Length: 330
Ligand SMILES: [Zn+2]
Image (tube, rainbow, N blue to C red; front, side, top):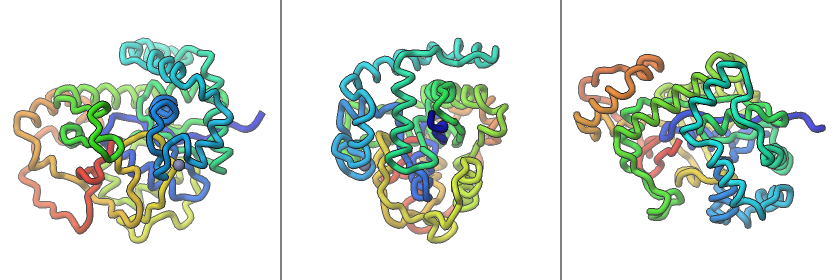
């Protein structure tokens, strides 16, 4: 049996910069930025949405090879099975199992397919590390229980007032108006999802120093090169030169990422800097609602409860991470 595949799993709630982190990591030698692999079956295989390289999923040279090794004819059923196993209402049971030291998600006949998928991806991409930005904690827990996968969890957290603001101005998933998959949850819902998924991520993995690293979006944008070096060391990625043109600018080549938001298609020189439009754009009422619903998480992850005085931060040139043109789903 071949050795397990090292998977760096980006976990947490959406709109936290995970798309950018995934694309940057994908520029290192021996790393494949695979995108949100939990959506491969539906958005990739069934819907044939564009790969990060621009080709339709089924025509992409990498995924064409991988598709030969997994039962793509069952993609719809596999997607439905995953949706059923990863529902929010299953989370309390999952946490009870984690607490009791048991396997967090029940075994399932499709587990072997998932193991084969990650092995095929690593082999055809010649990757020592596969970066999966699926984010959903239960899917990460499912992967972590598979014998063929060596999971490392990168928990990316961002101020929930910023993520709530970001959700409200969300664009289509693939750079075109895409009403079907666009979701603009109200701020209270964005706040609750932030609380649940970040708390669950921490609950499942935070005790495991070897397999878990937490990074805040705000620390990433304050020190992009330093933060990426820390992530690379944690994931077992050879630091090499990496894609940094300077400590806050990366040069991005296309990746083969599946699913996710339009910013995964960004290439060329991309400055990494904070997007804090929410400081001006988020209403007083929304700020209060989100804050009230996220207090335990704010404290836990080191965010202020009170609103700071009007920001005087002035951005440098370029597009900030999280601005509409490059808005980060994760
Ligand atoms: Zn591709």
